[in-house]
Image (cartoon, rainbow, N blue to C red; front, side):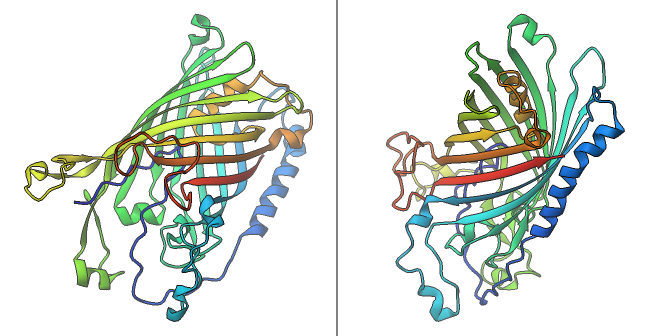
Length: 402
């Protein structure tokens, strides 16, 4: 009986999906096309927009719409442990594969808007994001991208986020803010469309507290729901007739229906450079599947861990460390709530360009809450559970707002 796949949480780094069986046809290497010219044009627009907007509006009036472009690169620790069978596919005219290592680069664009619906209450924060990702190296897991073609550019789901800071909370407890947010996704990614996801809805409640020593904490809890076309993944028989000839249209792999998550973030400004902060974050998440299996636990041939009804997924958890410069101004509403707690804890740069620049250098490990033999709780400081340490990853992102 297949185990359900954990539902993707919009604020958590996605886990690498289980490797899918490769089609029998020989994959064609797609040319590497990176839209660097588009990125350069958008960066130029950002640099030119600051003086133009300053002339168009009074200095004290803040423009309510913010746009951003960003680029990123990420790879896991498995790239340092190449597979001994790296060139085994050469006999089949396949490119070299580096075991369980992966590396990707991405290009993202975002917009955010502060809706001042009332003078008596805080504004509603609205943001939207879309990103494109491309594998930089060929691996057994296709660099975590849902494609059978190496080095192909893939679009992510389009994310929409609404958030509101609850009024008068800081009057009850000084330096405390409470935020509620709703996140939606449009299934534009290949993985969501293949799974039959029509949309995802996620609600989050977060509390942020700025301590007197400038250390800022944020705790959050969230729950999400997937709108699906089918409880199990279906194969498009017109696109993949060879799959349907073997297994039929229904793969029997259950889609995720419900998710839950919780976590704690902390950031602290470093005094030697304005805008520079160090942070860490821990999160735990899980869910249950859309498909039900009646009587599975009482089957004489079933595993002792078999579940009847909805299948509860194995909880995952993640611990990450990061170095930040500036603020991501077009991220989710929960991230914007953390930004509000951080503002005022450090002095901003006078340079208009540096105010718009955001950098993040991070390392994190995401793995099962329990070990593979279910005998102990894992500690995600580093991936000591696998030989390749493939569940520990590194990332660098650069964003420019305009």
